[in-house]
Image (cartoon, rainbow, N blue to C red; front, top):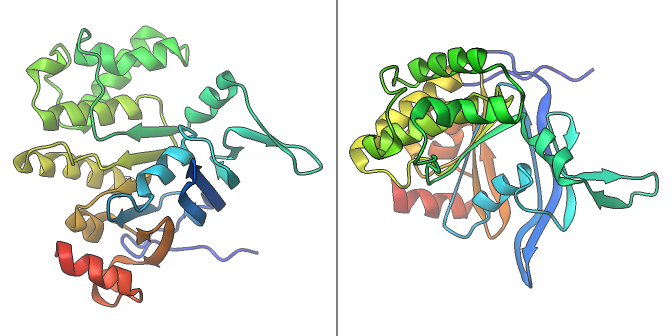
Length: 268
């Protein structure tokens, strides 16, 4: 029987594996971006992925959500073999778009850019997908959206349009929009990189709140303060590989990889 894992951050017992990447290969032409990357994330775990630009960290997130197809290996997320089916002979075929879309409902993704619809107010930005894609009743979607706006600290912005919001507020709306689909896993791709410094903390505070609430999160970021405060594990990617995977204390205070030591020396 598998031994339960415990969060080093909160002391909570983590659930079973919910995202499993097994020897994932991704390449663009002759450029190999992911080199047999393997990663397991448990339910309720917060994993931060760091690394230099071009190390493969954002590509890995996009592959987990099947925004990018992979050339080798498998990704199992929320009980689904993401984007593919495998027959008895091990042959892999890609699933139709509609089935991939159903698989993606279990995962919310927040990007660097906010991608809000400029012609819709905040409330409609958040309720659009639950109503159109999940078939949720409009009244229930609105009730949930208002709860989420309260959670991200914007209860008074339901009727505002994106152009009337700061960058930090827009990113918090984007987080609420992703949460509106009731995902089991949240993926964040450098969610603060497009923000002015004074707006970064308001977004990170929302993310810390999600982590404290037990949300499973995979976060690509350079915000090492967030990694120390909220992560159960911190990974470093280099050259398309995971070269360090450790709890925050070990990652920052006693890294095993020379790549990690060099990375930390340049950003801390």
